[in-house]
Image 1 (cartoon, helix red, strand yellow):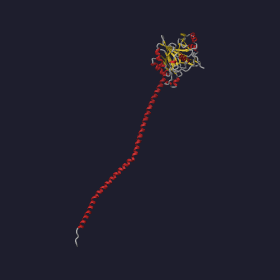
Image 2 (cartoon, rainbow, N blue to C red):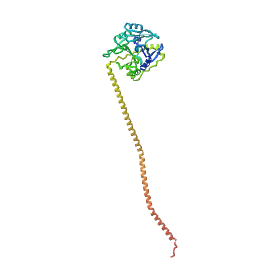
Image 3 (tube, rainbow, N blue to C red):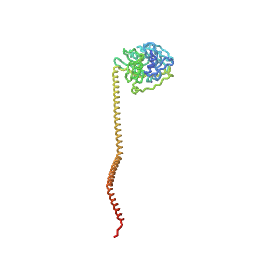
Image 4 (tube, rainbow, N blue to C red):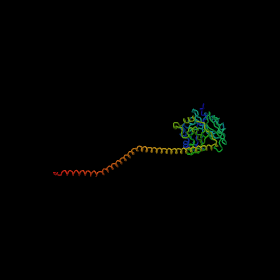
Length: 414
């Protein structure tokens, strides 16, 4: 059964900055957080994810801007005493806050700053980090083994695995509780900043987070890069110089969520602000196993592989476009031929329907012409016979008149 206590969990994160107003503009753009005032002190602004507040902003009067990660404890006084006995240093002693909790600020024996927090609320089991929540914590130390011994004694952390990053980077040591990895520790390179903790925030698309950070005035330190297990990470500094990191799960990439699908996030209402939400956030701190640093020697290969994938995708896109154009042209040509055949068929059919009519008309015309020719010849024959008949008639008429005249003469006696 999972340990439901708060001991050893990362429960709160505080930004120490010289520009609180600028931070309130920058982080919501990059990580999707919201901001809200603390009801106990409106001058203290909190960052909130969909599950509630997870950090705050503190105005820094001097020094370099940085983030402080707070780790939970059941007995803060005992933890602070033990930290001192193990070589740690207290920078702010145990302090009570209005909601009944207590906190203190310390440095481990190698100089990495962290905080401890004790709450009076009950705590549930650990859960997987949601979008906008912290999913991994990483310590760059001078001696990773000594660092682990210190924190293990304070918070009961256990080893969850090791990854050899190769020379000169060495071993990436992973730690956690109840079999669940919480983060990693490694030996920093000489050119790196002094020992410090860096928190990773889960985002749906680390590539987009890089673009947003740059456009908002941030600076990319490392990445984006793939790490063992398939997750992707990137580290930045905000406009004032505080270091933070973004983290995308391999599961998000496999399910296609990095292309655009996002979890729905409920707005944080004013009623949810203040100590109650702060305590709930502490009680429900969600941690999951996350990435180890990748061997730098493999980065060029990864970049080449990524470039090859992009080139292949581009070539495939061009090929698909060319194929689509060819298919469209072929379809249009086929449609044209079909239309031509259809039109020709229609004309032929019409001609076939009208052919008998033309044939009959032609025959009628020919017959009419023949009739007119016969009639003409008949009229000519009649005209030729007419004078003969007239002469015969006249002869007959003359004979009748002569006979009549003779008949009228007086007869002589014999």
